[in-house]
Image (tube, rainbow, N blue to C red; front, top):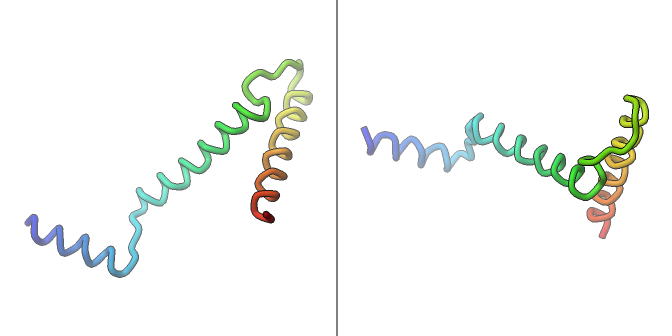
Length: 76
């Protein structure tokens, strides 16, 4: 049984198969990194305004700044 699993894993690596769990983990960790940066570097942790409209506006400015920074990294 162990040898069969090993052969199966080897065959999957050869053809470039990525399991659905690995794909979901990779996507989830990407999203978590973006959320962490938004909170730590772009003011998403402590919002000091009141009202859903103002909070939304402040968070969108943070997302805009994060997007611009990522685009600048791609261009350089």
